[in-house]
Picture 1 (cartoon, rainbow, N blue to C red):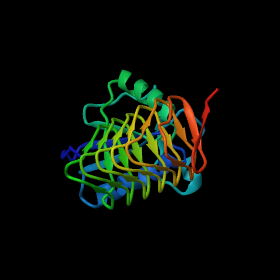
Picture 2 (picture 1 turned 90 degrees about the horizontal axis):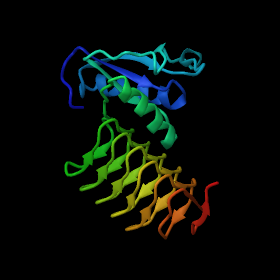
Picture 3 (picture 1 turned 45 degrees about the vertical axis):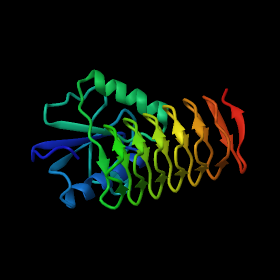
Length: 219
């Protein structure tokens, strides 16, 4: 985690369903002794009510209303790539410092590089020499192959796989159980639909869907 001070307080930006998942990941990381910190609450601009779903962690402020202290850290729990970037940019303007969350059950090879603000969920795998850009998400049971370059703010959904030497630009969304075969490139803002199998490069701002995946340009 990169922090050892007991005074560190972690906030989660986004109190929706993914935010509640991330709160659980963070609590388990702390309980496992991977990080000396405590959870401070959610930052959220909506009417999300975590308590309705049994989550005891409260919403303590809006995103713009929060003023971080030197010991505070924040992680963005927003599942749509462009929105992740927007929220992150707002937090940067407030002087926020970001945490990277790697669940104890995830495997991240010693030779892999993981950027700041990333979330690596339970049972995910990041193979040797992969590079994970800042503020990316690798969700439950997702697999990142050797030498993959995953762009900043990208989101890899549960059980999706990026095979060796795949390169994505920023803000890419890879849907659940999708597969990108080896050595392909995926452009900025592209989306891979759930269950798709990609055998050719995906242009920027396109959607790939089906098996074999067909390309459609986003409006």
